[in-house]
Image (cartoon, rainbow, N blue to C red; front, side, top):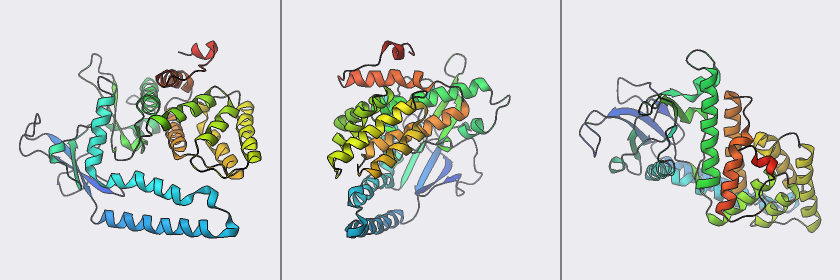
Length: 352
């Protein structure tokens, strides 16, 4: 997928990344419901990329093991080798482009019926491990709306796009448990949905090879932690982070100090909300985790980073946006979905 830019020669890529490069092409013959001449994006892996990536992870794994083995460094509590393994498990599936085709199908199903958000349609019959074929997306990069405000990129348009993007990511995290893990303006294409009255703005999310899916148990834990932070129950959030950690070497004193530290962060920042200052919260939480040897689960970090990236993009488009009013309904639905108690006070409910 790409923007409206095209190439006169199918041998010249219109985009390139660390794993593959993308070409614009047209179908020579009909494929399913797609007529000959249909514009498609063809994503082709770089030669020997699997071998190169596996070598990189082998080196990282050995370095992490070596650092954990050195006694006086006392780095075992960081579980660096586990972190490398988790990163590997996220990255390696991206090297099979059939997985990205499956991801696109999943996102299209999750957001079926939505008129303001879309994902490219993969042509599964033409896709292999090394080559992905999908419908070409015509439109304008989201980055254009971030960088300027003019007649073609009005304030109203920017505010609409901020709301669409944030709402979509919150749904991915809290309701669907299937998150696009490579969200940035370059992977968002904007057009107008002419099939809907008024031709509203629509965001196409592309390059869906990297995703995060937690599973029911980890997703419930994530909802509990983020819900506690949003409701300013810092001590409970800290305790949940410790309880859900698969490997924790913290002493009882460290755990207590960590939880009280999270509680203090929430108290000191009472003028703001977690979802509106995710970056500051994550920095402080990671500092406390290192200081008190509490290993944070990757699930929490990945979801929080997705929140932070989208919140940053949304605030660039719409500085006065009330993130809480968009995110809170998702949190409440997720809590009810998992049968959790302790819903917010009526004051928070009023934001709906």
